[in-house]
Image 1: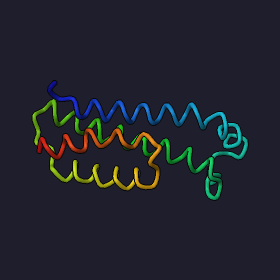
Image 2: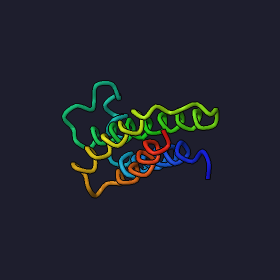
Image 3: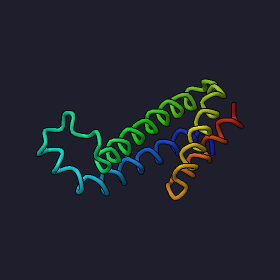
Image 4: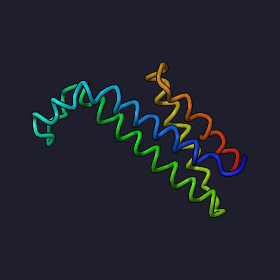
Length: 115
């Protein structure tokens, strides 16, 4: 299948964001709204987890969109993108081996091999 890496990353980013919203919004959403949202995250682990779930999910979506665009346009994807994803994934899986971070090994290695 051609041009699958970007789509795979978009799927991971969407899944990550949806899981974060589904699991953590009921826990922290009402608190955040009651506290006014601004400057209400620091020092509160559930709220920090919520922020990082959303930020990392959106960043994966962003990278996936960029890779998908480059694949469709026939633009060579720099090898450092794959190596960077691989390094981030190794770091993430080292600290959280029971996470879904393992999924990013697939597009990271595919990017390295295709560059």
